[in-house]
Amino acid sequence: MQTTTTSVAAKDGRKEDPGPYEGMRLRLIDATLAVVGEVGLENLTIRRVSEHAGVSVGLVHHHFDNKKSLVYKTFEHLIRRVREQLTNGRRGIEDPVERMKFTADMCFSDEVMSPGAANVWPHMWSSSAHDEEVQRLCAAFSKRLRSNFMFDLRQAGCDHTMARIHAIQALALVHGLWIEHRVAATVTISDVVGIFHGMIDDATRQIWKLNMSRSARSVPLN
Image 1 (spheres, one colour):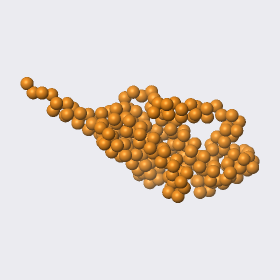
Image 2 (cartoon, one colour):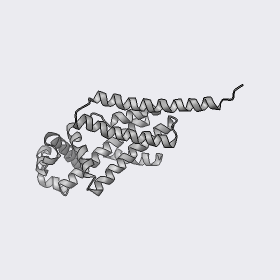
Image 3 (cartoon, helix red, strand yellow):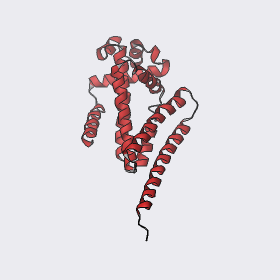
Image 4 (cartoon, one colour):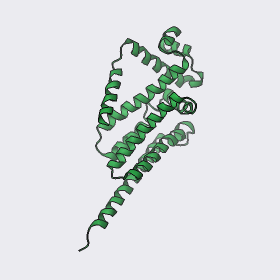
């Protein structure tokens, strides 16, 4: 597990100091997010991206074969950024409950909820229903997120079965609260954080109560 994390972090680390070619690709992806934030993904065009980035249409096509390729790489970029921030942030938090809360907060961070990113996320998930590449991308991200929650829950004292159940509940909250906040606009971001943190507190208190109950039953009576 540690080897994989280190490898991913090193790979992502190289992106922080990109060469001219990779730097232009990131510039075009940033332009894509800006355009999507302004007009939505359905109105995204290569020309609009080129105009926002201040480059020719031909240069955009040099880096991305077509709009589908550009959109997919934008999906990939968003997921990689969230994964990188999760990895770096979680590494410095020893308490498993606080680590879970940090993970929950990252799912609703300013970057994730920015106009461009917030318009891209739902399209990414809907595209996964008919695009195998996008489906694999979404599945890998969900598995990583669930694995993080399960790891923290196990460290907090939960057995494997309950850790899996609570982790699935956490994933459901990520998607459900995201829709309620961003799409339906029925809850504020403060509501989102409060509900998610409350679920984590409730789950871990149940774990601790169960552990204390088991411990009390195992103490021999004089």
